[in-house]
Image (tube, rainbow, N blue to C red; front, side):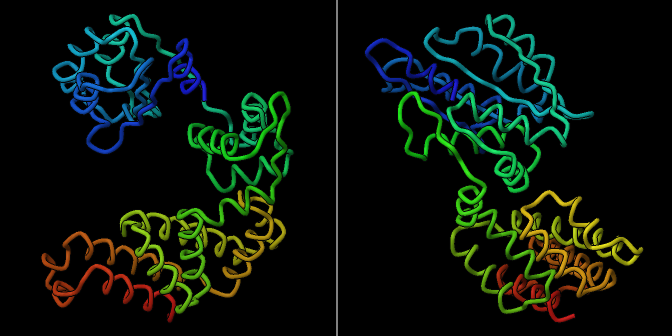
Length: 317
């Protein structure tokens, strides 16, 4: 929201905000975007994420020279989610400083403080979330502050808001909104796998694929959900109560209740076998069937056929 306000701050003229993704979100791609001609009038803002994955040599060769000649009416915002081994290259820090830019470090908020942080950010954007709404938002979006802020900005832009007044956003509104998102529907697919509902899992998969979702992304979500289910199953097997398990889940209360109920009807062995099946599916979808003699029979099948077979194997164990 702050960057968009900056883009629109020119007197009597609008601005543009561009989010660089895919090949454009690389040192060479950013340099090309900066050098490209644009018909936009006013300030131009370019946003790129994931710069912690960039390489030092690429920044020095492909981007640093362009940053030194960047037009004054252009703002480039680069975001890095730094961890132990993933950090923005030193060359990028140097290039930003030499271009007169700013480097801002934002410390990660502790997981138990995210709901409070989300409420505070929402207030800055003109929306008010109560405690329940903030918890639902964190449960659905995850613990990445950048993603949470994006969702808050979307909520602020989507609702009808009277100037000077704060719009109240309820937990029900957030749940209803998420029900239409592809990622939320992907979790529905994963939950059907956990619950052993072959028909629902297959239909969910085909709907998601029909909407353009990639198998690799769905595999990631399915595997993550099955690992969560396995962890819960082991806790229940060790004697923890259902109430204790549910309290530790970062998801809406009703969703947590359904998820734990599905897990309680299965066992760790089945969930481990399901994860192994998904690992085979990932291997096959990436061409592994051509390499391993034991899976050569899969080589002639389409990606979706292999996936549907894997879903059937997981849900009928």
